[in-house]
Image (cartoon, rainbow over all chains, first blue to last red; front, side, top):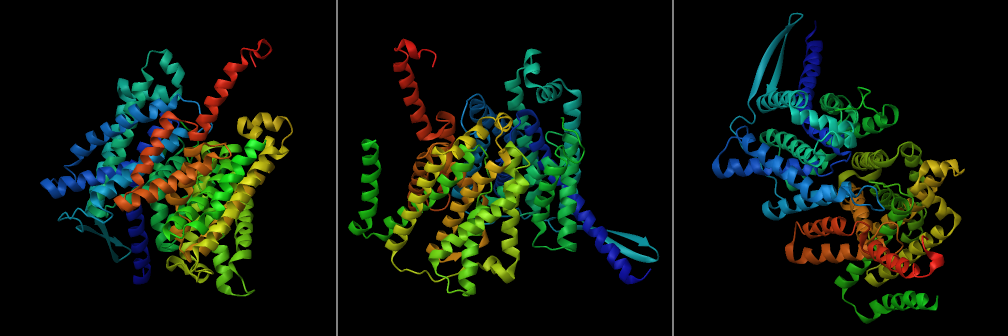
Length: 307
Length: 321
């Protein structure tokens, strides 16, 4: 094998690795959105803003009391759960029952919540870019592989690797929770048929609070995991909200396994596209795939939509 | 009827003589922005409120209108002036609307909304990256035609008046009834022989045309555009929806009221709070959705309708009507 070819392979594998690692985080964002969409049938357009809140909590915990971002997950997850459940209980649920001309008042409500959150962040923290300067932010693990006589050196960014592992752990925990626990079963029942679930004695309102709380906690975890490798600024939520619904549609609305797949596909697509096609159009791929999937595969890549 | 005419003509005259009486450029600027947003709200409302096709991506038409005019003016080929450029902006946006409609009207409800959003974001990225034509992120700088804000004031006043009048006429015509039928029940409308795709497309094209004209005006007035401004998701697309729903979707004057409140609240607080001033507008939106789900004008009309029904019910013939 020539060194050029080995270099090509090295680049390709490196890009795939970066895509999959990023995709793990995207899956976490998509899982939260998909859960909310499955149970409530609404698009949460404040999803990215909730992630931003988690990033600022991580930032505060680090800069004020030097809590490591990964440790601050123990603060962020409950905090975001409470914020999410509170938003659902006091703002979104009351609007669910109200008739209006525009059928999408709940969605617009989440837009309003997003505006308030991002502007509050701007008032409190200013629009400056902030970062969580951990010592291991650029730490990289190398793995040398021998391919046809040539040595290929693959690098793994440490924070991304940890983020990927935690994302997998949280995803697995969510699967177990939905599959094995009573509350998990109630959530799935509510997603399948809200009215029937209510007749069976499930307090569906409480289930929606829990669901929104879980969704917020999941995207919050993604925010915390991104904090060491990303800048934190008030307007960071918008692009991630778009990514979240792209992932959700790729995987099929409310399909949990699909959300994981959707996240990986988006991560890989962005990573491959930015290297092999064009960096500037990186974000356009997601949107184009999104529209194509909506039109040709309306039930998502896996072809079924259920929690 | 005469009472109605008085209600229209007197405020219009007041608005017309206003710049002669006050020459404060800041107030004029606020009024110009208000009227720009009236055009945006009213034209979004035709598609979103009256036809029930909620678009999350109207910045596509705003930006296309702005860029079409800007590119034309910059190319300098026919000696383009700002004024027939407005028409070019509108037509370019309407043309884009046929393409976007062709794709997105295959989808319904929230999927339609999100697909328009996605295409609008794609257009923003194209405007950002197609540097030969759009000058990329540097944007297009352009010498304004007038130094006097008064001229812009009258032009945007005329555009706003024409937009409101056009939407009013459309909604009084057969077309308007088709639009309402599609909003209320698309399948029922289809079964009554309404070509729903065609009429949704017409609604979108009219809406896009006025949005494009507004984009073109914005470009002329500000003298500078870049993709981040005119194709912005949260500051244009989403704001058009919020302005409409604040005042009252599917009412003629609701979006106009919403636009004025938006400019007053956001610009007013900008002076005192600086960055992050939109927090107050966000809170206002949440409060309105919680307590007046059909917007300010919508809720007033509703209350009025309820009162009228109650008085009507005293007439035995009207019971149950």
